[in-house]
Length: 146
Image 1: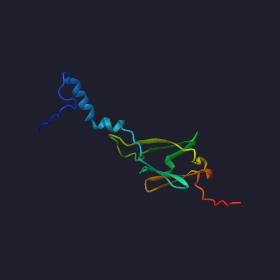
Image 2: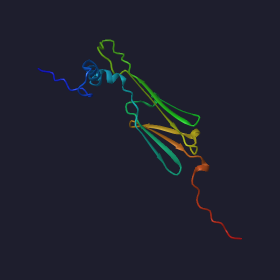
Image 3: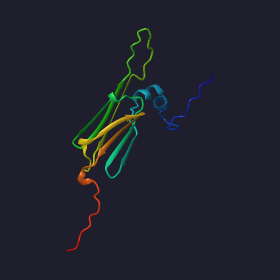
């Protein structure tokens, strides 16, 4: 079997050893799997009464999350550690034993950070952030002429 060397991303170079190191770095799945950080995708919606933040975070439990509001900044983080209790199994390589992330969002002044409600359903974290009463749209008021 013949292995084919892919050309370097930098093209022909006067520094073939350097190019090989770069090529090895970019094509090393083991190195990339250890250095890639998970950042969950977020949807942010708004209606007349509230803001809605949704984060796609499958595989976690609600106990894994830590949600805080401080100085009008919403901080969402989670940590999950897989623990193996089977003493008869020998682990030769473990690549998925610890997962964590943190996302922060600056809340608008119209948001009421004291009344945030959170639910976790089907791998999606839902946060309902109500608007302050003074920020909600008011119905038009008819003014009588005197």
